[in-house]
Amino acid sequence: MTAGSPHSNRSEVLHRFFAGITEYTFTSQLGVADPPLIDYLSGLLTHFVRTDAIFGLRTPTGERLLQVTDMLAEAQARQGPARRRVHRHIGDFTLFWLGVYPETAENRRKQTKDSLINYKDQGKRNYFLASRLPADDSSTPDDVLKRLSDRFELCVYGLGEVRKQWAEREGDDDAPILLG
Image (spheres, one colour):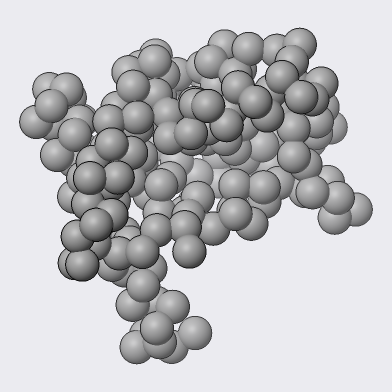
C-alpha cells in the first residue's frame, strides 16, 4: 500500500473523522480531558472499522476466536506480552460492542457460551490485567489501560454518544462511508 493509495487515504479520513468526533464527545459533552484515553478510543474505532480486526485474535494454529470465553482461554495459554495483547483485545472487543453496538453485543452474548459471562465485567477486568502484565515496545501504556478499566462504563457510554454523532453525519456528503 503506497502513501497515496485509496486505502491509505480512506484510513486517514476515517482516523481524522473518529478523532474529531471522539474528542468532541468526550471533551465537550462528557467533560473528560484525557488526551491519551481519547486518542486510544479513536484509534480503537479506526482499527475496528475492519471486521478482521474485531475478530483478529487467533490461536497459534490460526483458528479465529469469536467469543470472549474462547479469548479468555487463549489468554491463559499465553505468557508475557502475548498474554497482555490478548487481555487488551478482550477489553477492546467488549468495549467496542457494548459502546458502539450494544444491541448486537447482547444478541451475540445470548446466542453463545458467552451468555455465562458479563461483557462489562470482563472488559474492566481484562484491561486491568493487561495493565499489570509485561509490555513490549509497542504496547499501550499501563496507565491508559488502567484508566480504561477504571472508567469502562464512561467509555462505553461515550462510544455510544460517538455512534450517535456519526449516525447524524451519515447523510452528510463530507462524512466518510463507514464500515463499507
